[in-house]
Length: 296
Image: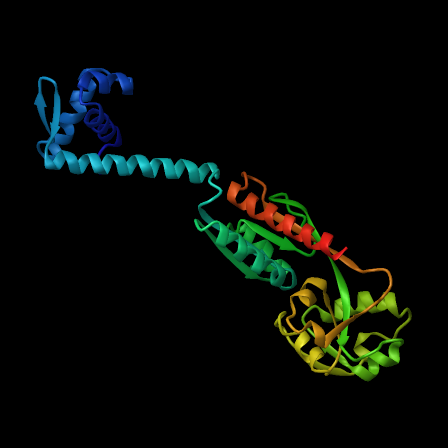
């Protein structure tokens, strides 16, 4: 590999056309620049034709000049990447729970369409996998439903997400017997969510496990499909319900005081978050705030 300082001296010489001016620009002696060029010519053959009023590049010299300029561009890219100050280029990785992910993914695509130099990676995952992925530097940003207690993570509230009791569009729910009649559609977090919300709506109920079991799905985007077909009810986060395409086929039952989960934004605390990742997080926060305002 060629010595980068030699290449830098040659590139400056080729650009300014004078050993004296090149030495002055680089803060070196003219003898040092001449020595660097001799070392390169020992490796690559003749690079310059020296004239009284300047220098002329040989074909090998022109190729080396292109190489030197490529090194300078690579150096600038590296410094920009390390500084994380380029908001319009590079990759941003976000890993989230499925419910909020259904809402955020279209917003991420909108943002990428407006910033074509960015590459957006999004993955749905439970809290444990989110923590592991952010700590393992596979994703810059993550959202969790429980606030992590790890000194390696910077953590802050991102948004709130109420739980909702969702039934088929034609159903009414007045008491526990209505839920027994409709039947329950489960999902991986369903029983814990149902216990929290239904305990608020129906105090001293016999528990969600006592209800007729009518189905299960572990795909967040499909949990409401059996509800829409009249096969049962479920308890699900609001963002998952809002992302469901067949809104006319389901209805949300009022349960009094809401049961609300805070979603926490996490990233590694030991180094600055890249500007492009900060920009994505701020964009998503703003779009969610606009939605809340529009909903009243």
